[in-house]
Image 1: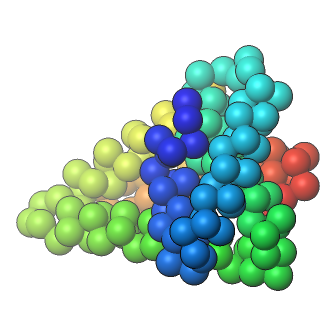
Image 2: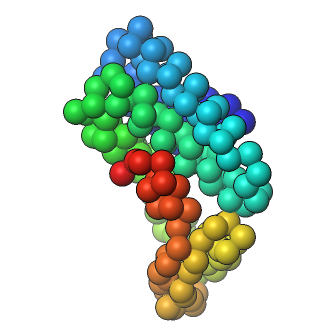
Length: 157
């Protein structure tokens, strides 16, 4: 996979483009691409469901963060947070539109529950504890997280 194909990397890139000159953006992005490829090479044999998280979300974030640390260490985390906030706002609007349709809240929760169990289950490197799982409410704790584990091992906040 290439860094430029990650939806999450795209969110960071748009924020970097907003705050830096085209030349600075190109330098940061070249460093991030290189860092991303190094991360992929360091973890070549991850199970497919774990790799879906590492290759598309975790490694892009780490690579971009490390590139930002080289260019602007005092602002690196702020830029990452702003980029992710943009992505979260877009996804949140989509979810809000879905659940605003008549009868869709229960359908959405059922589908979200199924997706959470599959995409964020043991085969994806997570541990979960479901507290409530109904058509009216969904609550669960993440008790093991590859995002936390890898970011900690790789020295990222």
